[in-house]
Image 1 (tube, rainbow, N blue to C red):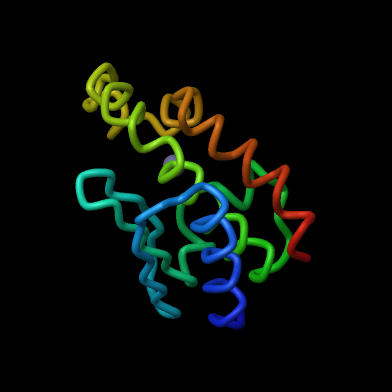
Image 2: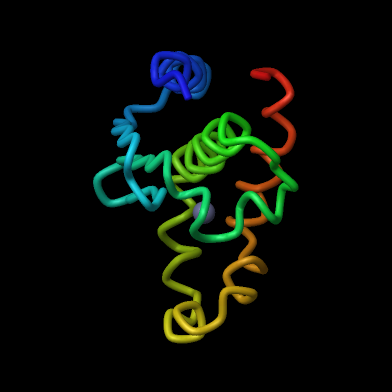
Length: 123
Ligand SMILES: [Zn+2]
């Protein structure tokens, strides 16, 4: 997956939504996440084997996965202001032990929907 393209996609949304978010892409990284406290996206391009974003969105290729994972985390950054309150209201223990619970969280559903919708603009 071409990192330049991922940064280009990121810059598009950064400008569109006036984000101050920073992005780090790690080609060999095994996870993707967004940290609202520091407004930071970490994108591990090898995370396709982990988690289940690829499954949830029926993604077939690594390119589709990397772009979708980036779009998912960008949506969290767009939602930053409401995200912190939403995170406070969730049951962290249930979250750690039940991946399906994770998939029912409103902000995760919004992020998946955003990724699903926007992916077609980039492939
Ligand atoms: Zn998420």
